[in-house]
Length: 158
Image 1 (cartoon, rainbow, N blue to C red):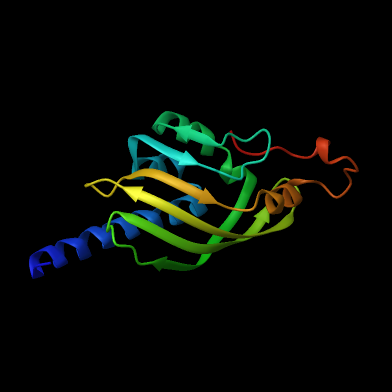
Image 2: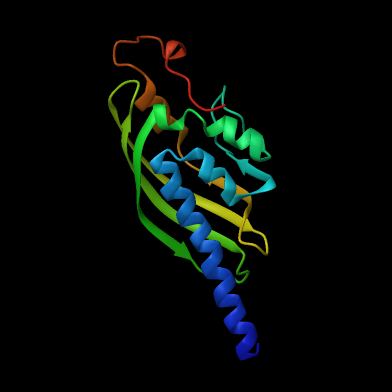
Protein backbone atom coordinates (compact mmCIF):
# COMPACT_ATOMS: atom_id res chain seq x y z
CA UNK A 1 0.00 0.00 0.00
CA UNK A 2 1.35 3.40 -0.91
CA UNK A 3 1.54 6.27 1.57
CA UNK A 4 -1.30 8.00 -0.29
CA UNK A 5 -3.52 4.91 -0.08
CA UNK A 6 -2.67 4.53 3.60
CA UNK A 7 -3.57 8.18 4.25
CA UNK A 8 -6.85 7.78 2.33
CA UNK A 9 -7.72 4.68 4.39
CA UNK A 10 -6.98 6.61 7.61
CA UNK A 11 -9.30 9.45 6.55
CA UNK A 12 -12.03 7.01 5.49
CA UNK A 13 -11.75 5.09 8.78
CA UNK A 14 -11.85 8.31 10.83
CA UNK A 15 -14.95 9.51 8.96
CA UNK A 16 -16.72 6.15 9.44
CA UNK A 17 -15.89 6.10 13.16
CA UNK A 18 -17.05 9.71 13.47
CA UNK A 19 -20.43 8.72 11.96
CA UNK A 20 -20.85 6.05 14.64
CA UNK A 21 -19.80 8.43 17.43
CA UNK A 22 -22.27 11.02 16.10
CA UNK A 23 -24.99 8.36 15.97
CA UNK A 24 -24.47 7.74 19.69
CA UNK A 25 -24.27 11.44 20.57
CA UNK A 26 -27.43 12.40 18.67
CA UNK A 27 -29.35 9.34 19.91
CA UNK A 28 -28.52 10.20 23.52
CA UNK A 29 -29.49 13.84 22.91
CA UNK A 30 -32.84 12.79 21.43
CA UNK A 31 -32.07 14.66 18.21
CA UNK A 32 -33.67 12.15 15.83
CA UNK A 33 -34.15 14.58 12.93
CA UNK A 34 -30.38 15.19 12.84
CA UNK A 35 -29.61 11.55 13.66
CA UNK A 36 -31.37 10.20 10.56
CA UNK A 37 -29.17 12.34 8.28
CA UNK A 38 -26.20 10.15 9.28
CA UNK A 39 -27.82 7.32 7.31
CA UNK A 40 -27.91 6.74 3.56
CA UNK A 41 -31.44 7.00 2.08
CA UNK A 42 -31.78 3.19 1.83
CA UNK A 43 -29.86 2.36 5.01
CA UNK A 44 -30.71 -0.70 7.09
CA UNK A 45 -30.83 -0.81 10.88
CA UNK A 46 -30.84 -4.42 12.04
CA UNK A 47 -31.54 -5.88 15.50
CA UNK A 48 -30.74 -9.62 15.46
CA UNK A 49 -31.88 -10.10 19.07
CA UNK A 50 -35.03 -7.98 18.92
CA UNK A 51 -37.84 -9.32 21.11
CA UNK A 52 -41.37 -9.93 19.84
CA UNK A 53 -43.04 -6.67 18.93
CA UNK A 54 -39.82 -4.98 17.82
CA UNK A 55 -38.83 -5.15 14.16
CA UNK A 56 -35.64 -7.04 13.41
CA UNK A 57 -34.91 -4.76 10.47
CA UNK A 58 -35.80 -1.18 9.59
CA UNK A 59 -34.99 0.10 6.10
CA UNK A 60 -34.87 3.65 4.72
CA UNK A 61 -34.62 7.05 6.37
CA UNK A 62 -38.39 7.53 6.81
CA UNK A 63 -38.75 4.16 8.53
CA UNK A 64 -35.65 4.82 10.64
CA UNK A 65 -37.06 8.14 11.80
CA UNK A 66 -40.43 6.58 12.62
CA UNK A 67 -38.69 3.77 14.53
CA UNK A 68 -36.58 6.13 16.66
CA UNK A 69 -39.11 8.96 17.06
CA UNK A 70 -40.15 7.87 20.59
CA UNK A 71 -36.67 6.99 21.86
CA UNK A 72 -36.26 10.34 23.71
CA UNK A 73 -39.50 9.70 25.65
CA UNK A 74 -38.48 6.11 26.40
CA UNK A 75 -34.85 6.31 27.50
CA UNK A 76 -32.64 8.98 29.01
CA UNK A 77 -29.18 7.57 28.32
CA UNK A 78 -25.56 8.37 27.85
CA UNK A 79 -23.27 6.19 25.78
CA UNK A 80 -19.91 5.61 27.44
CA UNK A 81 -16.72 3.58 27.13
CA UNK A 82 -16.75 3.70 23.32
CA UNK A 83 -14.03 1.52 21.80
CA UNK A 84 -13.45 1.05 18.08
CA UNK A 85 -11.88 -2.19 16.88
CA UNK A 86 -9.68 -1.92 13.81
CA UNK A 87 -10.85 -3.64 10.65
CA UNK A 88 -9.19 -4.22 7.30
CA UNK A 89 -12.01 -2.39 5.51
CA UNK A 90 -11.86 1.30 6.54
CA UNK A 91 -15.60 1.70 5.89
CA UNK A 92 -16.45 -1.07 8.36
CA UNK A 93 -16.67 -0.02 12.00
CA UNK A 94 -16.92 -2.36 14.95
CA UNK A 95 -17.83 -0.42 18.07
CA UNK A 96 -18.19 -1.59 21.65
CA UNK A 97 -19.88 0.69 24.19
CA UNK A 98 -22.26 0.89 27.13
CA UNK A 99 -25.40 2.89 27.73
CA UNK A 100 -26.18 4.14 31.16
CA UNK A 101 -29.37 5.88 32.11
CA UNK A 102 -33.03 5.49 32.92
CA UNK A 103 -36.13 4.01 31.32
CA UNK A 104 -38.41 7.03 31.56
CA UNK A 105 -41.79 5.22 31.74
CA UNK A 106 -40.71 3.30 34.86
CA UNK A 107 -37.84 5.30 36.34
CA UNK A 108 -35.81 2.09 36.44
CA UNK A 109 -32.11 2.06 35.55
CA UNK A 110 -31.14 1.13 32.03
CA UNK A 111 -27.61 -0.23 31.83
CA UNK A 112 -26.83 -1.89 28.51
CA UNK A 113 -23.70 -3.26 26.84
CA UNK A 114 -23.64 -3.11 23.04
CA UNK A 115 -21.55 -4.15 20.11
CA UNK A 116 -22.36 -2.59 16.75
CA UNK A 117 -21.10 -3.57 13.32
CA UNK A 118 -21.54 -0.62 11.00
CA UNK A 119 -20.92 -0.19 7.27
CA UNK A 120 -20.59 3.23 5.68
CA UNK A 121 -20.50 4.50 2.11
CA UNK A 122 -17.94 6.74 0.37
CA UNK A 123 -19.58 9.79 2.01
CA UNK A 124 -19.33 8.21 5.50
CA UNK A 125 -23.10 7.77 5.69
CA UNK A 126 -24.26 4.67 7.51
CA UNK A 127 -25.56 2.06 5.05
CA UNK A 128 -26.00 -0.88 7.44
CA UNK A 129 -26.07 -0.77 11.24
CA UNK A 130 -26.11 -4.17 12.93
CA UNK A 131 -26.96 -3.54 16.59
CA UNK A 132 -26.20 -6.26 19.15
CA UNK A 133 -27.87 -5.36 22.46
CA UNK A 134 -29.60 -7.38 25.13
CA UNK A 135 -33.38 -7.04 24.85
CA UNK A 136 -33.86 -8.60 28.29
CA UNK A 137 -32.19 -5.55 29.85
CA UNK A 138 -34.59 -3.23 28.02
CA UNK A 139 -37.63 -5.35 28.87
CA UNK A 140 -36.68 -5.36 32.56
CA UNK A 141 -36.11 -1.60 32.57
CA UNK A 142 -39.44 -0.92 30.85
CA UNK A 143 -41.55 -3.32 32.92
CA UNK A 144 -43.18 -1.59 35.88
CA UNK A 145 -42.39 -3.27 39.18
CA UNK A 146 -46.10 -3.69 39.93
CA UNK A 147 -46.83 -5.71 36.76
CA UNK A 148 -47.03 -9.40 37.70
CA UNK A 149 -47.44 -10.62 34.10
CA UNK A 150 -44.56 -9.72 31.75
CA UNK A 151 -47.03 -9.79 28.82
CA UNK A 152 -48.48 -6.55 30.25
CA UNK A 153 -45.13 -4.75 30.24
CA UNK A 154 -44.33 -1.54 28.43
CA UNK A 155 -43.47 -1.96 24.74
CA UNK A 156 -40.67 -0.18 22.94
CA UNK A 157 -39.41 0.40 19.42
CA UNK A 158 -41.23 0.31 16.10
